[in-house]
Image (cartoon, rainbow, N blue to C red; front, side, top):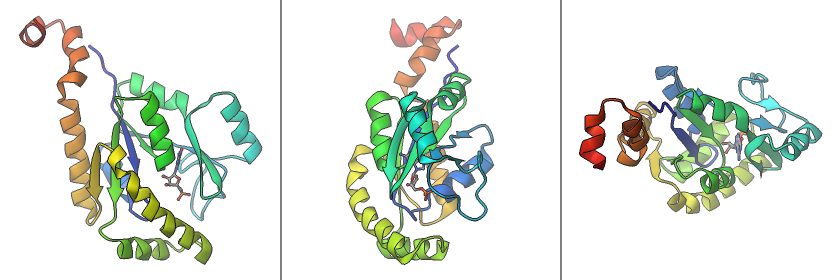
Length: 210
Ligand code: 5GP
């Protein structure tokens, strides 16, 4: 029986609440693996190396790019970010569902190579609410706040490249929607095909594929 997990790629503008939703989903589903990216950005207060990110110098990061260690990488707000390839592949092969919480450029790169990924765009309830959330986070300078806010307008144009959109007005509701997406995706016949073909209990196979 094929046990491959599903790959969920979650993007959305800074301040939409991707991190909060993903954390709430992971708290409920300990078996889901959240990929830990590498970045050249400075750690924020409270961030831990290996937990939030693998913090790298630019030289270390570019070395890893050279060695082909990333599934995708991108420059976001002047820093590099990349998804480690081997850990994601290992988790999927072990049957774990994997979340990549990455920017839009990265998501589009993953989409080119991984058609079976599930691409989910997280939206804020409104642009004003988005601005307030970034301000409240308190980690941005006025310049980086404006950069992130302006980027949000551009990023939302890419929503049509995604399979699903979830508005994050209430965390529990947004998590319920993610759970529903995962459940529905796992019921898709094209995903089940390998499982059914691998199954020794042949009658379902016969019904569907004879
Ligand atoms: P932050 O600096 O706020 O943690 O993240 C900035 C942006 O980089 C967010 O949109 C986040 O989703 C994105 N990001 C985090 N890790 C990766 C990654 O591995 N690849 C790409 N392409 N984007 C990432």
